[in-house]
Image (cartoon, rainbow, N blue to C red; front, top):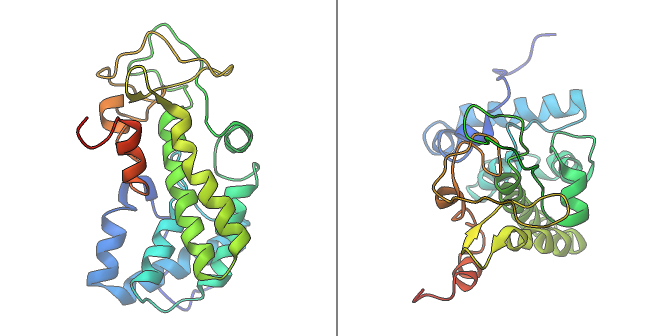
Length: 222
């Protein structure tokens, strides 16, 4: 059928979710409403809110636009955002392990550098999901869903599960929970422990709990 609005394809959230789609809200709010409607309609048609790579950042987009005052049925959207975060059959890869352990593992490989791409990107994925869960907690609180707020806030602290106090970096873990070795925080990885990055870059991604990360690192002076 013909849409009654300008229909957009899925947003590549991991690439543009923290820059372009936010800028569109500020510069072209009417176009952004069409994007919000497009993503929501595709969720109703497929049963799942769209995602990209290993994050689940649609929640950040909808929460951000709600905070910035764009008019939309945000309560209806929450059903699909929550389903993504709770149902392991959905687009959040490795969600079952994340829910069970609070972190996502990687297997040890001999040559993990590019172009190796079969890993879980476990550290990056864990940190991204923690941020998404924090956004869900804020979303739930705005809707008055206190139980969901507390649950997702607790999950937002899972970033501590991939913090290695010995090296002072976010570090990959094996399936049994032990740290992956050898470990080099400067080594660039494609999909092993980190997604297209290394630990020096990824370790800082705890935007929802900066003071908690400072504490893990030994305080402000450290």
